[in-house]
Image 1 (spheres, rainbow, N blue to C red):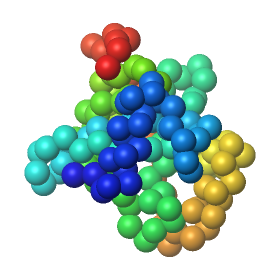
Image 2: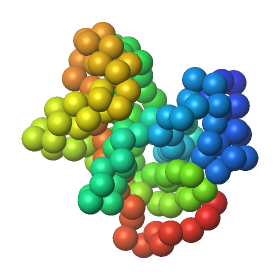
Image 3: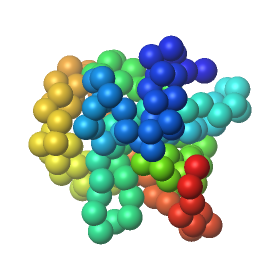
Image 4: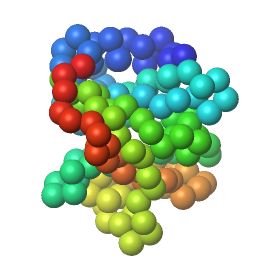
Length: 145
């Protein structure tokens, strides 16, 4: 279940084809739906993403604001990498997978360039923050939500 803040962001996102105001105004934001590792229930959360041109994937960072623990969505997708991504007015099935070590730092560099707050998250976290690629599932054609 989403907290009240996330629920408001999710509702605004869906009502405005991915556009939201407040702290996420102008930010590349997607909705990520995972299956709860314990409950088996769908769990949707907003997440900042980095487009990865030429790779047909989006990249998310399991930073949890630099917390010592990864966010719940990360634990869920480790248990079941089949996810649903909503970006703009589009919704599709995707497969989540950690990026390989060779890409990890370059993707971080690009994200920090786009959003300097991520440098603080990375510095504050007492762990290596996973970088996750979300790749459209082969069976998932483009479709509206």
